[in-house]
Every structure is written in structure tokens, then in C-alpha cells.
Length: 150
Image (cartoon, rainbow, N blue to C red):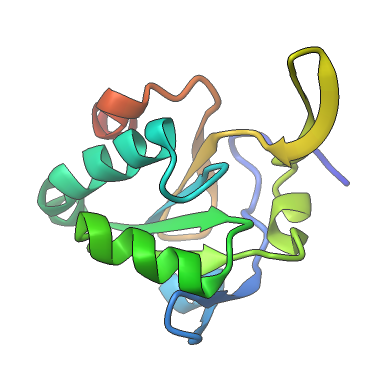
């Protein structure tokens, strides 16, 4: 597994969205992509982050961005999350963590001193040529769109 950095070509992947449709990064050729990895649907911080992207979605679209969220939750949970918060973008169900491994976002974390494996909240900004132009690792959920745009 290679650690991705700014200037690298974003690894292509294929996943399944909330509606069971196949989605690949290469489907977004000639478009800018916000690829954001988050731990869990319907949890406090993940909801704040998704709602911030939702609330700023039109501005992001005007700047040419497509937004794609990825977590290890399944399609059914993604559909509930989208319905409850009217999210206008697609969410990928990466239940086997293949995309997480490609982007090095599945790592050991600790809760109450006990180690476990989970998603490291990370956002990759990818340009029209598929090159990573920014990697946000210190995500501020309530102002994430501002972090992306600035």
C-alpha cells in the first residue's frame, strides 16, 4: 500500500452506491471530485460533515466539483442517511474496505484505550485530470466546504 500525496494520480476504483449502481472514479473524467471518507452514517460528526457539504453543495457544483462520500456502511444505511438529511450526492458502500485500502484510510484507531480498525476521516480533492490536488486530514465537520474551497 502506497501512501498517497498531493500530485499523485488518484487510484481508480469501482464501488456500489446507495442505489446499487456501479460507480468508478474514472466515470468522472474531466470533472473535479471531492472524495470524502467518513466513519459512519447517522453519527453526530459524520452527519455534521455531510450536512455541511449538502448546505454548500450548489457552491461546490458551481466550482465544478462532484461530491462522493465513502464509508464501510452498506447501501441500506446509506439510503437512510441520504433520506433523513436530504443529501444530494452519492455515497459508496465500501463494505469490504477495498477503496479504503487503496486510499490508505482504513487504520488502527483507539477508543477507551482499546485498538480497533476504522476509517480515518480524510478528504481527497481530485482535479479534472485525476490528480490529487489536496488531502484534508484535519477535517472540520461544520466547515468542511470552506476547507475544500480555500
